[in-house]
Image (cartoon, rainbow, N blue to C red; front, side, top):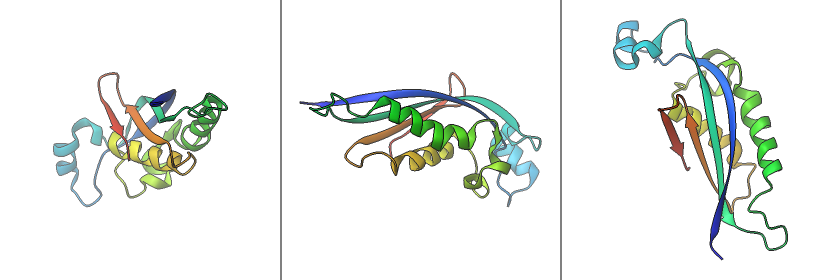
Length: 136
């Protein structure tokens, strides 16, 4: 039997500022544009977490979707929702909170909780048109 992918959607709101501390405000603005606003800006992030593997013959699941839902809530939504990522989330104290880096942080948080024989993919929408996918 082939592999099946199961996915769960989630949502969180967060503020951030894209900038490098070592750079001047002028260089940050040149590279990151209005996303480098010193007063921050926010997004309504949409998240899709996908888990791929073979279907368990006994349960019929690749992964229990309730477990996946609970993991996303505990490891991602509680950490990031309604937060200023630069200020309130330790992972971004020294890491620029780009969509790419946010997706990697999310993947790392979930990877340790999901059976290693299953593949994990995180797709993060920063806007309806801008999104990144990280597969580890």
